[in-house]
Length: 252
Image 1 (cartoon, rainbow, N blue to C red):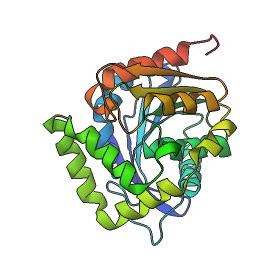
Image 2 (tube, one colour):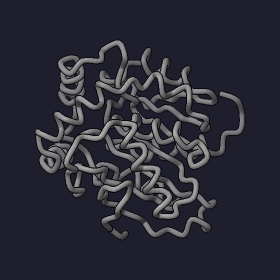
Image 3 (tube, rainbow, N blue to C red):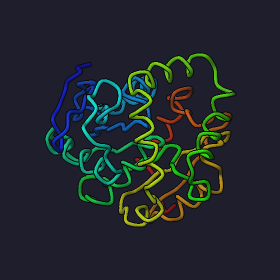
Protein backbone atom coordinates (compact mmCIF):
# COMPACT_ATOMS: atom_id res chain seq x y z
CA UNK A 1 0.00 0.00 0.00
CA UNK A 2 1.32 3.45 -0.91
CA UNK A 3 0.69 6.71 0.96
CA UNK A 4 1.07 10.02 -0.86
CA UNK A 5 0.24 13.72 -0.63
CA UNK A 6 -1.75 15.00 -3.59
CA UNK A 7 -2.84 18.48 -4.68
CA UNK A 8 -6.57 18.53 -5.45
CA UNK A 9 -8.78 21.56 -5.95
CA UNK A 10 -6.06 23.82 -4.59
CA UNK A 11 -5.70 21.85 -1.34
CA UNK A 12 -3.40 19.13 -0.05
CA UNK A 13 -4.98 15.76 0.64
CA UNK A 14 -3.40 12.47 1.67
CA UNK A 15 -4.25 9.21 -0.06
CA UNK A 16 -3.59 5.53 0.40
CA UNK A 17 -3.78 3.10 -2.49
CA UNK A 18 -3.76 -0.69 -2.32
CA UNK A 19 -2.11 -0.73 -5.76
CA UNK A 20 -4.42 -3.57 -6.72
CA UNK A 21 -4.73 -4.00 -10.46
CA UNK A 22 -8.33 -2.98 -11.04
CA UNK A 23 -8.38 -4.88 -14.33
CA UNK A 24 -7.89 -8.09 -12.36
CA UNK A 25 -10.86 -7.36 -10.09
CA UNK A 26 -13.84 -6.55 -12.33
CA UNK A 27 -12.22 -3.22 -13.23
CA UNK A 28 -13.39 -1.67 -9.96
CA UNK A 29 -11.84 1.09 -7.92
CA UNK A 30 -13.35 1.91 -4.53
CA UNK A 31 -12.87 5.45 -3.19
CA UNK A 32 -13.41 5.74 0.58
CA UNK A 33 -14.38 9.10 2.14
CA UNK A 34 -14.25 9.44 5.94
CA UNK A 35 -16.49 11.22 8.44
CA UNK A 36 -15.84 14.21 10.69
CA UNK A 37 -12.68 14.02 12.75
CA UNK A 38 -11.66 10.78 11.08
CA UNK A 39 -9.18 9.76 8.39
CA UNK A 40 -7.82 6.93 6.30
CA UNK A 41 -7.05 4.62 9.25
CA UNK A 42 -10.75 4.46 10.12
CA UNK A 43 -11.35 2.37 6.99
CA UNK A 44 -8.69 -0.28 7.63
CA UNK A 45 -11.05 -3.24 8.04
CA UNK A 46 -13.38 -2.21 5.21
CA UNK A 47 -10.42 -1.55 2.90
CA UNK A 48 -8.96 -4.99 3.61
CA UNK A 49 -12.31 -6.64 2.92
CA UNK A 50 -12.72 -4.79 -0.39
CA UNK A 51 -9.22 -5.55 -1.71
CA UNK A 52 -10.34 -8.89 -3.12
CA UNK A 53 -12.89 -7.04 -5.26
CA UNK A 54 -10.85 -4.16 -6.67
CA UNK A 55 -8.39 -1.37 -6.10
CA UNK A 56 -9.08 0.56 -2.88
CA UNK A 57 -8.19 4.23 -2.55
CA UNK A 58 -8.84 6.21 0.64
CA UNK A 59 -8.46 9.93 1.20
CA UNK A 60 -7.72 12.25 4.11
CA UNK A 61 -9.74 15.35 3.25
CA UNK A 62 -8.21 18.81 3.91
CA UNK A 63 -7.65 19.29 7.65
CA UNK A 64 -8.25 15.65 8.58
CA UNK A 65 -5.91 12.75 9.29
CA UNK A 66 -2.48 13.66 7.93
CA UNK A 67 -3.76 16.30 5.49
CA UNK A 68 -2.83 19.88 6.49
CA UNK A 69 -5.54 22.25 7.65
CA UNK A 70 -6.51 24.86 5.03
CA UNK A 71 -6.83 28.55 5.87
CA UNK A 72 -10.63 28.48 5.88
CA UNK A 73 -13.30 25.88 6.54
CA UNK A 74 -14.69 24.34 3.37
CA UNK A 75 -18.41 23.84 2.79
CA UNK A 76 -19.66 20.38 1.93
CA UNK A 77 -20.09 21.51 -1.69
CA UNK A 78 -16.46 22.73 -1.76
CA UNK A 79 -15.29 19.44 -0.26
CA UNK A 80 -17.23 17.65 -2.98
CA UNK A 81 -15.40 19.72 -5.59
CA UNK A 82 -12.04 18.77 -4.01
CA UNK A 83 -13.06 15.12 -4.26
CA UNK A 84 -13.98 15.53 -7.92
CA UNK A 85 -10.61 17.12 -8.71
CA UNK A 86 -8.84 14.35 -6.79
CA UNK A 87 -10.53 11.69 -8.93
CA UNK A 88 -9.54 13.49 -12.12
CA UNK A 89 -5.96 14.28 -11.02
CA UNK A 90 -5.40 10.69 -9.93
CA UNK A 91 -7.03 9.24 -13.05
CA UNK A 92 -9.38 7.02 -11.02
CA UNK A 93 -11.90 6.72 -13.84
CA UNK A 94 -15.38 6.13 -12.39
CA UNK A 95 -14.78 4.82 -8.87
CA UNK A 96 -17.33 3.28 -6.54
CA UNK A 97 -17.75 6.21 -4.15
CA UNK A 98 -18.14 5.16 -0.51
CA UNK A 99 -18.79 7.82 2.13
CA UNK A 100 -19.30 7.46 5.88
CA UNK A 101 -21.14 9.95 8.13
CA UNK A 102 -19.93 13.45 7.10
CA UNK A 103 -18.30 11.67 4.18
CA UNK A 104 -21.79 10.89 2.86
CA UNK A 105 -22.43 14.63 2.59
CA UNK A 106 -19.18 15.12 0.68
CA UNK A 107 -19.93 12.11 -1.52
CA UNK A 108 -23.48 13.32 -2.18
CA UNK A 109 -22.18 16.70 -3.31
CA UNK A 110 -19.55 15.16 -5.58
CA UNK A 111 -22.06 12.74 -7.11
CA UNK A 112 -24.63 15.51 -7.66
CA UNK A 113 -22.07 17.85 -9.21
CA UNK A 114 -20.53 15.24 -11.53
CA UNK A 115 -22.88 12.31 -12.12
CA UNK A 116 -20.71 11.23 -15.05
CA UNK A 117 -17.84 10.40 -12.66
CA UNK A 118 -19.83 8.51 -10.06
CA UNK A 119 -22.25 5.89 -11.42
CA UNK A 120 -22.03 3.88 -8.16
CA UNK A 121 -22.41 5.47 -4.71
CA UNK A 122 -22.55 3.95 -1.21
CA UNK A 123 -23.67 6.09 1.74
CA UNK A 124 -22.87 4.54 5.14
CA UNK A 125 -24.61 6.19 8.13
CA UNK A 126 -25.77 9.30 6.22
CA UNK A 127 -25.83 12.62 8.07
CA UNK A 128 -27.20 15.08 9.12
CA UNK A 129 -30.71 14.08 10.23
CA UNK A 130 -32.78 17.11 9.20
CA UNK A 131 -35.11 16.57 12.17
CA UNK A 132 -32.23 16.94 14.65
CA UNK A 133 -30.02 19.48 12.91
CA UNK A 134 -28.36 21.20 15.86
CA UNK A 135 -24.91 20.87 17.40
CA UNK A 136 -26.20 19.96 20.91
CA UNK A 137 -28.52 17.28 19.53
CA UNK A 138 -25.91 15.77 17.22
CA UNK A 139 -23.29 15.83 20.00
CA UNK A 140 -25.68 13.95 22.26
CA UNK A 141 -26.40 11.38 19.54
CA UNK A 142 -22.68 10.79 18.96
CA UNK A 143 -22.13 10.34 22.70
CA UNK A 144 -25.02 7.88 22.84
CA UNK A 145 -23.38 5.86 20.10
CA UNK A 146 -19.95 5.88 21.79
CA UNK A 147 -21.34 4.74 25.15
CA UNK A 148 -21.86 1.24 23.78
CA UNK A 149 -18.67 0.93 21.73
CA UNK A 150 -15.72 -1.33 22.46
CA UNK A 151 -12.20 -0.04 23.32
CA UNK A 152 -10.88 -0.62 19.78
CA UNK A 153 -13.34 1.89 18.31
CA UNK A 154 -12.52 4.39 21.06
CA UNK A 155 -8.79 4.11 20.40
CA UNK A 156 -9.14 4.54 16.63
CA UNK A 157 -11.50 7.48 17.13
CA UNK A 158 -9.35 9.27 19.72
CA UNK A 159 -6.22 8.98 17.57
CA UNK A 160 -8.02 10.54 14.63
CA UNK A 161 -9.70 13.27 16.69
CA UNK A 162 -6.30 14.21 18.14
CA UNK A 163 -4.94 14.73 14.63
CA UNK A 164 -7.90 16.88 13.62
CA UNK A 165 -7.84 19.05 16.74
CA UNK A 166 -10.81 20.74 18.44
CA UNK A 167 -10.71 24.03 16.48
CA UNK A 168 -10.96 22.40 13.05
CA UNK A 169 -13.47 19.84 14.33
CA UNK A 170 -15.83 22.59 15.52
CA UNK A 171 -15.49 24.44 12.21
CA UNK A 172 -16.37 21.31 10.24
CA UNK A 173 -19.24 20.45 12.58
CA UNK A 174 -20.74 23.83 11.75
CA UNK A 175 -20.24 23.14 8.02
CA UNK A 176 -22.09 19.86 8.45
CA UNK A 177 -25.02 21.59 10.17
CA UNK A 178 -25.17 24.28 7.48
CA UNK A 179 -25.49 21.66 4.75
CA UNK A 180 -29.04 20.63 3.81
CA UNK A 181 -28.19 17.21 2.42
CA UNK A 182 -31.86 16.50 1.69
CA UNK A 183 -31.69 19.15 -1.05
CA UNK A 184 -28.67 17.49 -2.68
CA UNK A 185 -29.82 13.85 -2.53
CA UNK A 186 -32.51 14.09 -5.27
CA UNK A 187 -29.82 15.29 -7.71
CA UNK A 188 -27.83 12.06 -7.36
CA UNK A 189 -28.20 9.95 -10.50
CA UNK A 190 -26.00 7.06 -9.33
CA UNK A 191 -27.01 3.50 -8.54
CA UNK A 192 -26.96 4.06 -4.79
CA UNK A 193 -26.79 1.87 -1.68
CA UNK A 194 -27.58 3.32 1.75
CA UNK A 195 -26.19 1.39 4.75
CA UNK A 196 -27.22 1.77 8.39
CA UNK A 197 -26.23 -0.06 11.57
CA UNK A 198 -29.53 -0.98 13.18
CA UNK A 199 -28.35 0.37 16.55
CA UNK A 200 -27.20 3.74 15.22
CA UNK A 201 -28.72 6.63 17.25
CA UNK A 202 -27.03 9.25 15.05
CA UNK A 203 -28.90 7.99 11.97
CA UNK A 204 -32.34 6.74 13.07
CA UNK A 205 -34.17 4.24 10.88
CA UNK A 206 -36.80 6.76 9.77
CA UNK A 207 -34.22 9.32 8.67
CA UNK A 208 -32.23 6.77 6.67
CA UNK A 209 -35.45 5.65 4.99
CA UNK A 210 -36.02 9.31 4.01
CA UNK A 211 -32.49 9.53 2.60
CA UNK A 212 -33.07 6.41 0.52
CA UNK A 213 -36.43 7.61 -0.76
CA UNK A 214 -34.94 10.95 -1.86
CA UNK A 215 -32.40 9.30 -4.17
CA UNK A 216 -33.66 7.82 -7.44
CA UNK A 217 -32.44 4.23 -7.91
CA UNK A 218 -31.43 3.81 -4.25
CA UNK A 219 -31.96 0.96 -1.82
CA UNK A 220 -31.25 0.52 1.88
CA UNK A 221 -29.74 -2.25 4.00
CA UNK A 222 -29.13 -2.52 7.76
CA UNK A 223 -26.29 -4.26 9.60
CA UNK A 224 -27.55 -6.12 12.65
CA UNK A 225 -26.16 -5.16 16.04
CA UNK A 226 -24.01 -2.27 14.80
CA UNK A 227 -24.00 1.45 15.49
CA UNK A 228 -22.65 4.49 13.69
CA UNK A 229 -19.18 2.97 13.21
CA UNK A 230 -20.49 -0.18 11.57
CA UNK A 231 -17.71 -0.40 8.96
CA UNK A 232 -15.06 -0.23 11.71
CA UNK A 233 -16.47 -3.18 13.65
CA UNK A 234 -17.91 -5.15 10.75
CA UNK A 235 -16.05 -4.09 7.63
CA UNK A 236 -16.44 -7.52 6.06
CA UNK A 237 -20.24 -7.34 6.29
CA UNK A 238 -20.37 -3.83 4.82
CA UNK A 239 -18.01 -4.91 2.02
CA UNK A 240 -20.27 -7.86 1.25
CA UNK A 241 -23.31 -5.57 1.00
CA UNK A 242 -21.38 -3.22 -1.30
CA UNK A 243 -20.26 -5.99 -3.66
CA UNK A 244 -23.75 -7.52 -3.72
CA UNK A 245 -25.16 -4.11 -4.57
CA UNK A 246 -22.76 -3.67 -7.49
CA UNK A 247 -23.99 -6.96 -8.88
CA UNK A 248 -27.66 -6.15 -8.23
CA UNK A 249 -29.46 -5.39 -11.47
CA UNK A 250 -33.04 -5.27 -10.26
CA UNK A 251 -35.07 -2.29 -9.17
CA UNK A 252 -34.84 -1.06 -5.53
